[in-house]
Amino acid sequence: MADSYREVSSEGWGSRLGKAVKGVVVGLVLFLVSFPLLFWNEGRAVHRAQDLEEGTKNVVSISADKADQANNGKLVHLTGKAEPKGTLTDPDFGVSVHAIRLTRTVEMYQWKEEKKEEKKKKLGGGEETVTTYNYNKGWSDDLQDSSKFKVEEGHANPASKPFEDKTGQADDVTVGAFRLSKSLIGKIDKTEPVPPKAPASDSAGSKLPEGFKVEKDYYYKGKDPANPAVGDVRVSFKEVPPTVVSLIARQTGDTFEPYTTSRGGQIEELRVGEYSADAMFKMAEQENVTLTWILRLVGLVMMGAGLYMLFSPFVVFADVIPFVGDLLGLGVALFAFVVALSLSLITIALGWVFYRPLLGIPLLVVGVASLTGLVVIGRRRRAARALDKAPPTVT
Image (tube, helix red, strand yellow):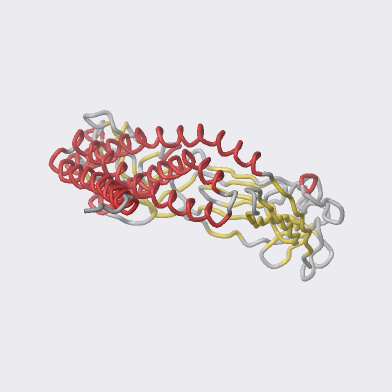
């Protein structure tokens, strides 16, 4: 059952204007930082592509059955089954599995606070904020600190969980005749649930923690799993079982380390499943492209947000008449986006000119043309307004 609490607060025009002025500094920082971020990202993308291209030319596919010392120091590709030595055990619940990784997740039924704000501008530049706090019960593996709730009374949560989340990883994992490095082991991420089971009655000293029982997919502590109460706990386990992997790295004896390219970059790839070297490099190239576009978008958003914050005091100043402030805010947002897009294109183009000139020069022309077009349109509009205001000529 959910409940809610509603709070109404007001902020004066002067206070809002003061915050907007302070925000100019933050906006300036965002605006300035976006340029080196965009430029650096283009260099990162080109260098990563060069590393992968070099790797494609130099990689040698080998068998996992033998650690041939003739391949020592070479960039190698192999496929085989990753097998851990020994077992991983959770002593609290007596879970023991032959796995590469064992993860324990502890969830508790708790109160959760959801905060929603609605702002409304008032005549004179002030602003009214209606904040609604909704309280719902639900499962969460994060501890919800009810002491920080707006309304703690009636929504108190336990101060701690009886057990913490925990992950154990095998130190010794082999693929055929090779041992995997810790970094490669960490890349194996295909998980499966570990079904809970009650300890055998004839196992000496084997029992679940006090109050816990097996309930469907969980070790459960509480009176009624069908109707959980605040403070009830459920614990689940996941494992990364022995699995087939494909990897590309530098062979060092019977193990691996990152391969260093001629320009100082590193290559160390692992995929769960059976993949050829060519397929793995293509996936790495696609990931590089995806990351490049994500960082480009981040840079664009930073630049646009920074520009908007630089002009936000004018928007707040115009909010004395809310309708005028809304129109100005829309105009500033559009202006910030267009300018940020143009400047981002120019910055990316400069990065391309520096790192890959044949592609960068055309993009630079597009960016400069868009920014120039924006300036020309602005001048024409100012000229048109001046002409409209000019007095008629008497002849």
